[in-house]
Every structure is written in C-alpha cells, then in structure tokens.
Image (cartoon, rainbow over all chains, first blue to last red; front, side, top):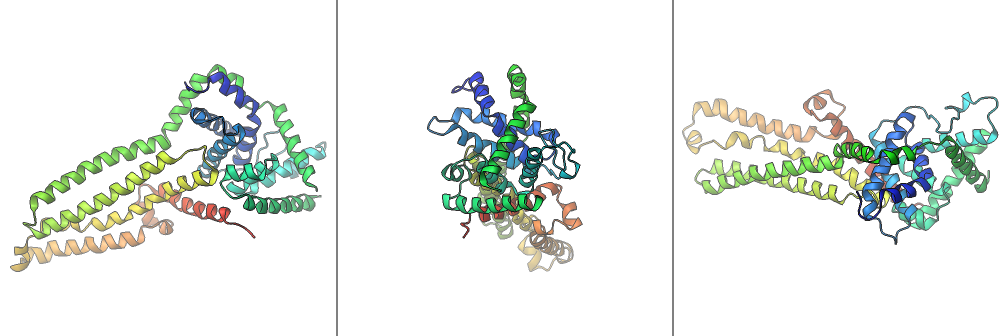
Length: 168
Length: 223
C-alpha cells in the first residue's frame, strides 16, 4: 500500500483521467486484445510512482509522462503490426465503413488512422496537441524546447490539413 | 479543415470512448490487491528482474575478479606468461564489472515520470550497452597462455610448437574475428544468430540504436 495516497484516492484520480489512458492505449496498441494489458501496465506504473508524486507538479503532466513512457516502451516491445481495431466500435478500415456511418464517425476513424501511422514520438506530440496542452506543458512532458514544439506542431497541422483534404 | 474542426473530432472521439465504457475501474477497485500482485509479477519480469540479474552477475564477477587478483598477487611475476595472462584476464573482468555497474545505475535512474525523451533514451542506452561487452571475445587467447613456460620456447619443445602455440594462435584470430564480426549490423547472418543464444537481445540492440537516433532527431531544433 502506498503511504502518500490511498488506493481509493488513487482510483478516483485515475477515473477522472481515464480518457487519457484510453486514448494513449488506442494510439500505441493496434491490437485491441493487448490494450487491456497496456492499460493495466500504465495504471500499475502510475500506482508505483504515486508515492513520488509532489503537489507542485500538475497531475495531468505527471500522468501523461508515465502513461506515454509506458506506452512507448510497450509499443517498441510488441510488434503491433496488426490492423487498427477501433476502440469506438467504428469499422476497422475506412473501406468497410457502414453506409449509415456519420460524417463525424468517418472523421474520427481518419484521425485514428493518421495517429496510428505516426512514429512513437510524433504520436505523443499529436495526442498532446489534440488534448490542447500548452506548448510549455508539451515541452515539459516530452523533454524538448518550446520552440521545437511550436515548429513540430505547425508541421502536424499541415499534415492534418492534407490528410483531411485528400479524403474529402 | 480548421484547427477547431480537428479538436472537435478529438472531443467527439472522447465522447465515443466515454460511451463505450472501456476500462471498468470499478471492478479493478474491488480486486485491487489481485490486480496489484499480477502486475508486480509482470513487472518482476522486466526492469526489476533485470537489475536483480545484473546485481547477481556483479557479485559473481566480483568474486571471480578477486580470485584472479589473489592469483596475480601470489604469482608476483615468477612466471611472466602466467602473470601476464592472469593480469589481462583481471583487466577484462574489471572492465566488465564497470559496464555492469553502469547498467545497474542506469536501471536505477530510469524513472517513468521523467520527460519522455530522457526516459526513452536511458531505456535505449541500456538495451544497446550489451554490445559493449563484445570486447570479451578478445580474452580468449589468455586462457591458452597462462600455463605457458619459458623453457618450452627456449628448448624448442615440439609439443609446444605443434600443439599449444597453434591452438593459442587459432584462439587469438578467432577472438579478433568474433570481436569484429559479432556486431548488431551482422545479425542477419545465420552464423551470428546461431552463435548468440540471445539473438532477440541483439535485435533489441539494433532497435535501441535506431530509436536513439530517432530521439536525437526528434530533439533537434527544426527550422
């Protein structure tokens, strides 16, 4: 049992931020059967590190660092070359989309596919950008300079525009 | 497509996730102790286990090096071949101990709550540091020279020139050949794979080196 934070408090914090874990698992693990494993590994590392958490840190920054570090290590260990299986019950491939798929569902799938195609570090940057994190926080989580974050994000924006323009 | 449109898609995605009720945290809360012990077991197979293995290897290595040191001290240059061979093996072992200590320190420094590029660099350095041990192939000939005696050379002993010397020469060339060729870049060669029982470890070395380059590239300021 952890000294600094009780199990109940910990699970409460995880519950509030579980979206972060799910989105990271989805981005780094193509096979849905392994996603539960990755999610558990992330939660376990968060629990192990909970004692070291200091209130001066922003909880989400700390959580992103751990979740992304575990996910990148997992991603590099596992050879996840399987096709994308969406978490959201959407079809696995744009070609297989049902006739009644809404425009938004297709857009979500496009975005998921784009993220899946990125390398481990660019995935992290893309997730943080989509989560509307400030440049300073992204730089802090990734360990790069704010200027570098700004340049990379401008490239991501161009890529997103191209992706959606090509498919329209 | 505007920035806000993409962010809207991301938010819609978040709502979809919320609806699909993935990650049943309530059931985990009920079985938290079981969950914790399963994860502890899994984690035991990774970094902690690796640190434990390295520490055990360090202890054994230290005992072996100490033994060599005692032999070296006891010999006191009475037999040059013996002293030189044991001295060389002693130095090889010291260098190995230094690499192992460095690896253990690196494992202890790895903290998942540090910035992504820092942690991933440490993990990749750890994986690629195995290749640093390939210099150990070069110690092979010294296991063939410690029992040499100057009288064998001075009196042109036939068995020495026909058996001992060629065997030593063979292991010298073999050691140099293996040192130069058993490298991650040659992992595609069948004989290298067959030689290394730990083939997957070498594959992870190659991947680690590639990822280190990727991290450096990611950290570079773009213009």
